[in-house]
Length: 126
Image (tube, rainbow, N blue to C red; front, side):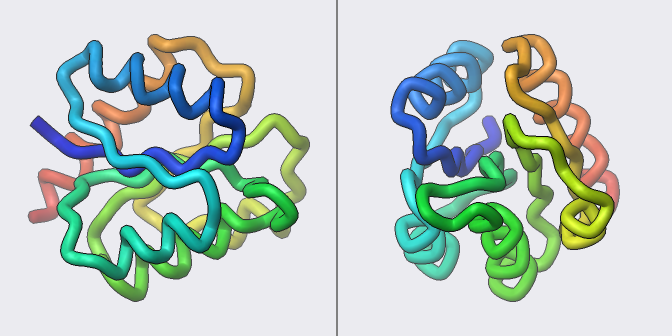
């Protein structure tokens, strides 16, 4: 089964996302900050999708930086962005494809649907 890297600075939301994904059969890796995410992305760790909050701690657009790091280190890995804040068009233009956006609060089914869809779309390109 696919491995999802969950990047979320709010512990309860990280636990919830990991639980939902694991219950559906996905394996998860987790990072609570941009620095932790960068270390995992640039390591030898295997993952098939990144699910990242856009605001990470003090870095309001840390998730956008995650997208850039992923694209440089692992070109084909899809990114599922999430946020509870209102996004500007300028912010959305910084999303790195292949990607989707899932606004908070999201339902478990929405997380699973977006994950499945992104993984299926990117598998067709491999």
